[in-house]
Length: 139
Image (cartoon, rainbow, N blue to C red; front, side, top):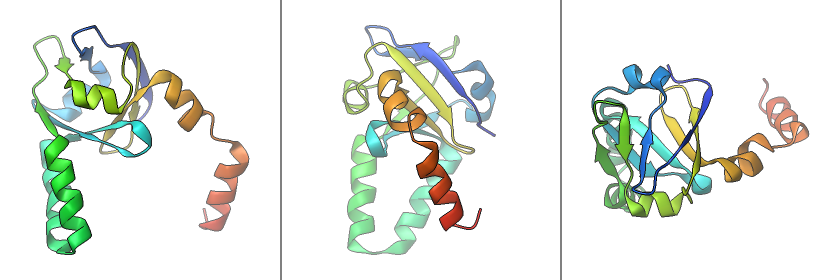
C-alpha cells in the first residue's frame, strides 16, 4: 500500500529517485500519466490495466476520448538499478517539475507533484473545506 509523502529532487535530465518505501510495491515497471490538478499519477502495470479495462467497458465516447488521451501521454518506465526513473519532458512540463518533487501515496497509486504547487493545492487545502466534505459525505 502506498501511503505517506516523500520529497526528492529531479535532476536536469529529468531523472528522479522513487521513494524507497514505495519501490517494492510499484514493481519493475510503472505507468506514468498526466493527472488532474497538474500532477502526475503513477500506476503499477496491473493497476493501470484494471483502470483501462474499466474505461474500455464503459464504451461511451467520452471514455474513449479519455482513454486515447491517457495512452497518448502515458509513459511505461522501468526504474534503473538505483531506483531512478526518467520522466519525459511532456510529463515534466505538465506537472511543472523542475527541482523539488513531492511523492504522495494514494493507496494503490502514487502522485508526483511540483512541491510548491502541492503546498498550495494539496497541503494548503483548508481544514474547513475538508471538514465540509467529510460531513457532507457521512464520514
